[in-house]
Image 1 (cartoon, rainbow, N blue to C red):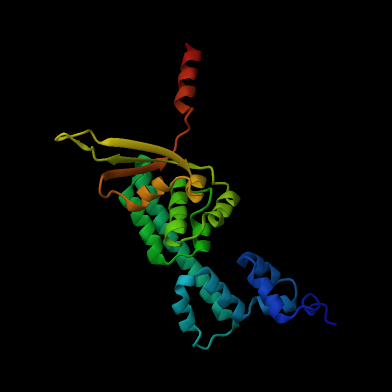
Image 2: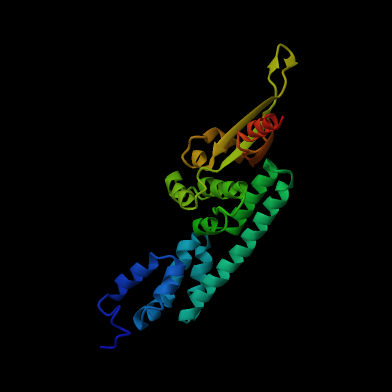
Amino acid sequence: MDPSMSTGASIPDDIALKLASSLHVADICSLGSCSRFWWELCRSDFLWKSLCRKRWPALALEIESLSYDNHNHEEWKVFYIRKHNEMARKAGGVIDFVNRCLAFESIEVGHYLKAIRDLDSMLLGFEDVHTFFLKSKHNVLVNLIGLHYCLIWLGLPGECVMEILNNSNISQRQVSVQWWKLGRWFFGFRLRDELITRTISLEDLATGKEEEVLGVLHRGAVHEVIRVQISAAKPACTSWSFQNAQDANQ
């Protein structure tokens, strides 16, 4: 028996394809270097088309239209790589926009919602959001935009997103949301506008503990809410520690 074929010779092709389809792309590429059997399977047209459908369900029509063309085995893989690079470039543009808005440490809700609408227009899938937005290297507001998009636009259950937040070590990151509500009318006089400030973690939003805040972020400045600002939460002990340090030096 050819030793290069022995690794997968005893596995039916449909089982092997199902196994490979459950892996991440990087793992599939590694698996393809194990033997001739896995090399052939991991470059198959069927596998990469399946990966495209799974990652970009919103692009199903585009993917199906390509099915009528004459593709060799590598072309679906090329399509996947091209689409990944395209999404990476577009996601990078959104992240740059958010970082520019954060020059003054907070972002207005209009800019925040624009970033989310941009993700929607790009037809990003969950894996794209995970890959480009839910990473610890980014500002927590970039994480928040990715989380908001997953919960509202993609309609994903919170427990599904929580797994990614935990794996990326960002679930306990906190944001501060401030919104101003028009003052109520009282006997012909309008009371002062009310400022509401809430500090919440990404986990709070994903698990539904802060539905009111998520609603404010999703609606933006409408009706009685006249302004919404979002910023990264600052450690509560910062000012206290600074004051103690001054006292100790006196």
